[in-house]
Amino acid sequence: MAKRSAGILLYRWRDSGLQLLLVHPGGPFWRNKDVGAWQIPKGEIEPGEDPAAAAIREVAEELGVAITGTPSPLATIRQAGGKIVDAFLAEQDINADAIRSITFEMEWPPRSDKRAAFPEVDAARWVTLEEADAIILASQRPLLDAARERLLGHVDA
Image (cartoon, rainbow, N blue to C red):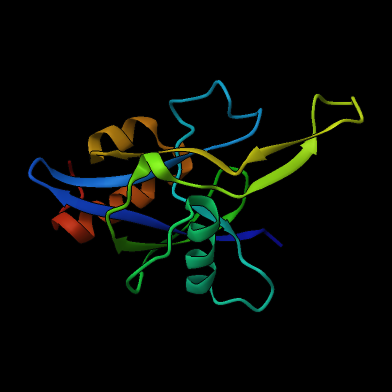
């Protein structure tokens, strides 16, 4: 059975238009990756957990921010690795430079018997839809299309 995650695509409106919040995963695998690495904040749904509740919990863990409204369902996608992601949409302005992510531990360097801690998210950035199209993890691009349709009323940028 495929792993299932839930996350929230945060958005805000500026004079220049719509902005979306994407995050860059922490850890050594993602360290030198930029284009194609940015994602929505998300994480695994615990057994018996409601996907919306999991998405709210994951945003709090990865950004250090409480969601103030009720996220609305956006889309469910299957990522390239097979993971199912239930994505939600919420309007909320946060300071992307002030995020505080929880950490995870892993053996690093490989086969060293040493453990190192890394943030789950090492950066967050507000971007336009066009910028998001260029940097988002390819298998999450359908989330941008769903947001475009929901928030702007059309699919084409």
